[in-house]
View 1 (cartoon, rainbow, N blue to C red):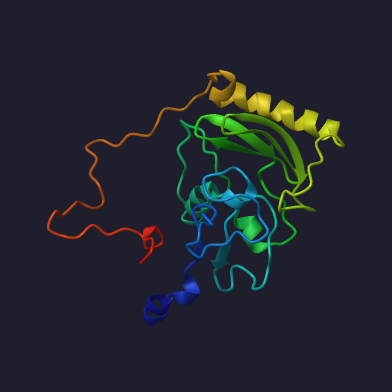
View 2 (tube, one colour):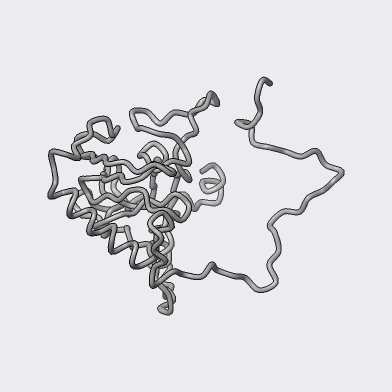
Amino acid sequence: MHELKTLGLDDNTIVIFTSDNGSRCRGQGGSNGILRGTKATTWEGGQRVPCIVRWPNKIPKGIVCRELATSMDFYPTLAALGNATLPNDRVIDGKNILPLMQSKNTKSPHEIFFYYMRNCLEAVRNTEWKLHVRKEDQEIKELYNLRADPGETKNLFKANPEVVKELTTKMDECRRDIGDEATGIKGKNIRPAGRVANPDTLTHYDHEHPYVIAMYDLYGG
């Protein structure tokens, strides 16, 4: 922000502060608050992240949006702001969420969201409910109302069979589309990994320089 102000660009730049996934919560100072689970899990504590967006005169101050959005949405959103054309030869999972950023009354463009652990489908949610069917190698049956219980503390699976049925149907559709290793379904539209011709790493190892690791990986220091 200091540099943007120095250059006179702070009022004409969109600034996004966010994170990649939940805290590990293993004594390094991180916290997921009331959310269950940690980084590398499909509980909300491993998935939800803060997102603060600043764009003076474009995004109103003080709005809190509780709609479903993901970091995948930044790609089409920023592309739209830059008048860029997205490729039409592939599926783009992200959605343009500029309307969410600008108005608290706008609904999410995502009706459903799937949670994978590696190649295994573990959970699914819509705007209100989240159904868990697996954690690692263990099958489970847990349903939570994320609006009333974002911490996933009260299992409502048995009390809401229609919700379970609806979300299970969505999971079956997802499995047929992109697969689910846990159930042995390969999926009809598995997408190949992206490849770059003549790739080069952003950084290169210097054997004469000490190896640097993240501060939270330092134990007993």
